Length: 230
Image 1 (tube, rainbow, N blue to C red):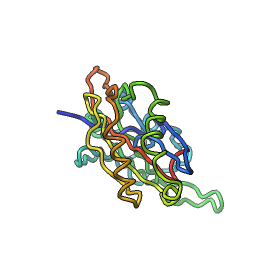
Image 2 (tube, rainbow, N blue to C red; image 1 turned 45 degrees about the vertical axis):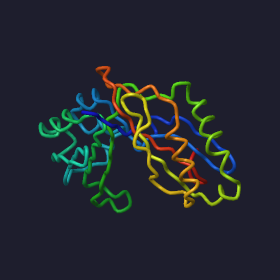
Image 3 (cartoon, rainbow, N blue to C red; image 1 turned 135 degrees about the horizontal axis):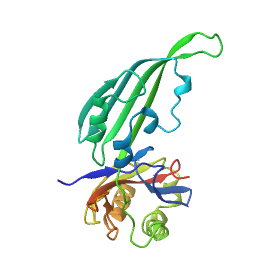
Image 4 (cartoon, rainbow, N blue to C red; image 1 turned 90 degrees about the vertical axis):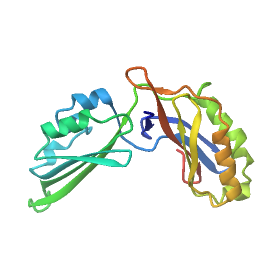
């Protein structure tokens, strides 16, 4: 069965650029990555959530964990930060591309009036492959390709009207571009066509691999606009 993964934004920023008042970048879709091995070794929330704020928590109200994959959701609950057997089983069953969502309701002391109040901690992480997909000639060449074949072809007048356009695409198991689509329109059909075309016409990438060396698909976003980029 083919697998697709969504690579976290902070974990893998492939390229960023700036031209004609337009920022552009290729990146993943989530902010918090985790590899299969770390997930399977986890025994507490602190093993999953960086800088877990255990010192803030007086007591727990509810601890809910869910695994979302291919539109299906599995749930497991606990009573504190120590993972239950059910939660560990859920984590061990997570494949590449699975999104793990954790919602913790807890009581914490208000530093102003010293009274306890209920708060919520929400955290999500996505299971990522061992080796990420790569543009064959490097990230700078990818930036140059996108700039020359798309960004530079957008007029200065039209570029000022683009707040954010998003093209989602998958680098499949063969390194080919698959399922490219406009996720958020630029507001100009011709520019959307240009952005979609530059992605579909990219050369083959080196595909992502899991820890067993099996090739897997990987999903990316190409964002263009005055509010994208760094």
